[in-house]
Image (cartoon, rainbow, N blue to C red; front, side, top):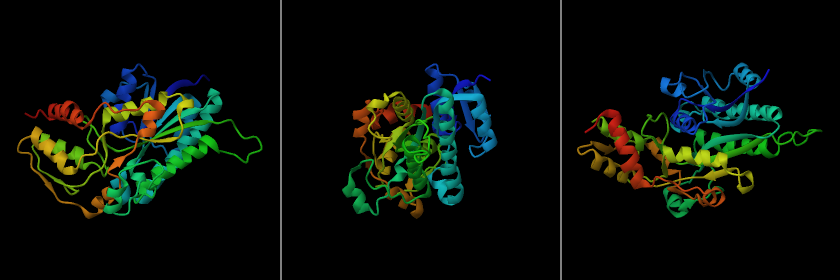
Length: 341
């Protein structure tokens, strides 16, 4: 049987998955196999060659995919995010770690059919960092990839281990086998900051106070931020996140000096975000009522990420700084979404 060539996108119904499918389709890459545990919105599903409802932990489903499709690129976006993962840490580990390993094994199998390594794109997170207190956070400044890799959440632990699994499958898989296979996985990962989308609602991330603030104001709803006004962490507009993912996929392998790269854009305080929202939606009712647990998580993340390695290796640079992200992308599109004045 001839395998149909597709780009596999897991977690296709999430914020990043939907944005990635839009971008792939817009570039002419419509041979997309989308997989999510829930049905995709109709406008996303129609951009895909195949849209499946299924679980990345379903071995029968994965075996079927391997037998029917050739997948030169896999975008593994499926995950339980940081806040949700803290409520169900064992389930999060099962999805985030076992699911990642299952997809890496698929990549190895696929490479034997394709005769070349499968590109495996893995979104990691600022959650892999863990600073012990606010004094250390202030002193650290922009954190490099190798620094402070001591996460304080299950999600951060899962993502850091996912990075290590990717390195293992790319460089050391079956290293003691009598006939070690040729390299099957070309693993590439991005440590994203908090991501803000104008077109989808956030679901379960600890950086969600930023998008929630804007969406609430646009609907005329009061919003109580779960972090204090002075809280700082890095953010990125969703279009830049997708662009960086596709840039890394396209980067020549010989230019890459690591498997894992920081990317980032701007690092406002929660108070500065609130000021921008109030300026766009006069009368927006925004208060600050920190949730100690979620506040503690954000406090353990750096205020900034150092992304100089991505800039040097494959030309990364964000198109949306803070001003443009709010003025040209977030505010007008969210305003249109709700018909706000």
